[in-house]
Length: 194
Image (cartoon, rainbow, N blue to C red; front, side, top):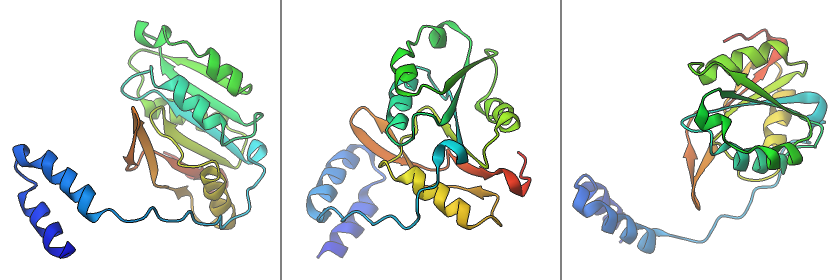
């Protein structure tokens, strides 16, 4: 029965006037129990000495305070976090006081108005003194407090890999959705450059 419902929803999903009712029907008919959380696989390294987090502004700067405060819940307070933001009125007006309070080692780098997020990543990679650099945009959220530990732990046990690309999520109001490829953990010792 569920297979037929799923096939019907997929077949009809291309018509916009049918899409929302179909999504609602799918969620009601096909939802099951929430999966149980997985136990951590890796021991958490000393993140303050192993990891630099580089966050860049993507789309809008208004998301940064919430993203940085959320990030603080997953990191030791002395972890170096670098936030690159373009200098234009919309970004300059964003109050980062809560982020500075949550992340005492927060470094805010003002970039030219036309700088891309990749420019911020590249600049910070050159100044990072830690073995790992986590590159994220300001609309990316870790699902739980241990996810960054898992990522750094996996990277530490696999030094032959230069880049780790986790599945991250972004939040739009109260909805958390997959955020395909917005982060990479770079292994500095592998000599990987971008």
